[in-house]
Amino acid sequence: MDWAFLRFLAVGGSFSLSYALVTSALIRFASAPPLPTSVIIYLLCIPLAFWAQKKIAFRADQTGRSAMLIYAGTQVASLAVVSTITSRFVTRIFLWDTLIFLVTAGTAAVVSYAICRFIIFRHSPGSDAQ
Image (cartoon, rainbow, N blue to C red; front, side):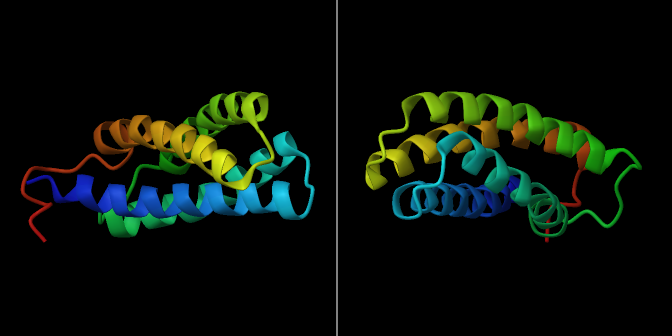
C-alpha cells in the first residue's frame, strides 16, 4: 500500500478544496476579479502546501537544497494552467465555479504528486511503513 499517496491525497485534497471554496467565495460574494483572485490564493497556498506535503504526506526530514524551488516551479506552472482555464470558464455561480476550480486544481495536484514522489521527496523503499 502506498501510504504516501493516500496522505498526499488528503493534504492535496484539503488544499484543493480550500482553494476552490475561498476563490469561489471571493469572486461571488466579494465581487473579486477572477484571474487575480485565483492567482493570489494559489500563490498563498504554495509554501503552506510544501510544508504539509513534506511533513505529512511524504514525512521527509530532509530535502535537497532546491526542493522548495522545484516545488514552487511546479506549482507556478500549475498556476498558469489552472488560472488560464478557470478564468476563461468562470460563471459567477458559486457551485459551478467551485466545481471548475476543484477539477482544475485537482488535476494539477495529480501531476504535482508524481513530481513530489519521484523528484522532490524521493525516499528509500520501506520508509513509508509508518
